[in-house]
Length: 164
Image (cartoon, helix red, strand yellow):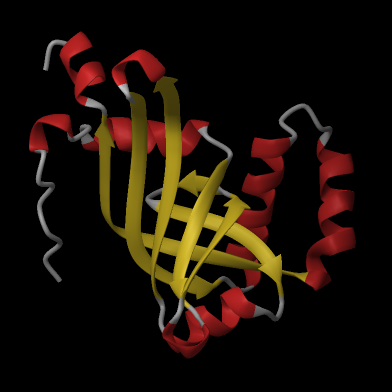
């Protein structure tokens, strides 16, 4: 599939910066084709590694049902949202990833859980982390979004500050 180009290309962020935004943030919004064709967007915690976004969820529910029906998803992360009242605008920076989602199994699932644990509790001792993972592994599902297209955009005011 060919994704449409950004209309305001001057404000487009370089690919590497989009990846940096995904790595440093902790929450994003997953959008799927939900029940009866209604869009379903849900905020969640995630980790980004090796061109994929990983998140955990229960082994059943709206997200998984939607992904099983249609694996095409988008994922949005807002990196900056500064309201500037006197200019009637916001200085924003965000990233949107498009890709296909699927349930991870076996060692891939374990590696994803470990990556999440490392991101959200980087100072945990390995034994404590492994015990926490072992205690919850049977009740959760790891989902991987293989990113097919990644784009980011920032407010024109921020673009001008950078001299682009």
